[in-house]
Amino acid sequence: MSISFLLPLSSRNANAVVWRGLMVQKATQQLLFDVDWSPGLDVLVVDLPPGTGDVHLTLAQLVKVDGIVIVSTPQEVALADVKKGVDMFRKTGVPVRLPFLIFHLHLCLCLTAWV
Image 1 (cartoon, rainbow, N blue to C red):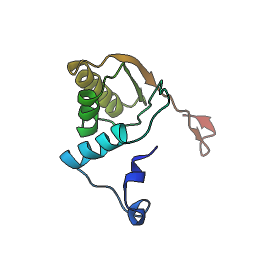
Image 2 (tube, helix red, strand yellow):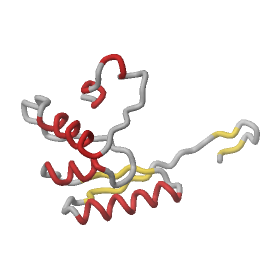
Image 3 (cartoon, one colour):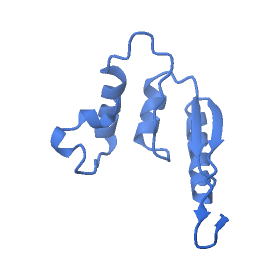
Image 4 (tube, rainbow, N blue to C red):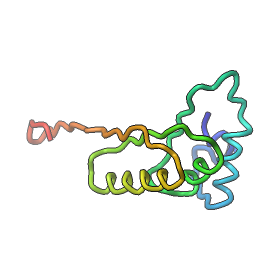
């Protein structure tokens, strides 16, 4: 299921979605409560952008979350977002199960070496 299914057909692939506050909360509520997740949903994986925005808070406040897994790259700016996200979820009572780092190897053809 994708939030893009809640958008008009004409704007699904063509335009950026610019929502704030109540619009984001309403769309999140629709995704969580108006979709038929039965029978017996065991795990729901929600891919969120980095940060501590409206969707993160809405999820933490509206549903019982057993835990979160934060996936990040090892860059300093990404890790700063991870720290803020972990702090926010802990303050809302959501357990952080596992921080997960993705290390990316890049082959630089100009140097013929791994970077």
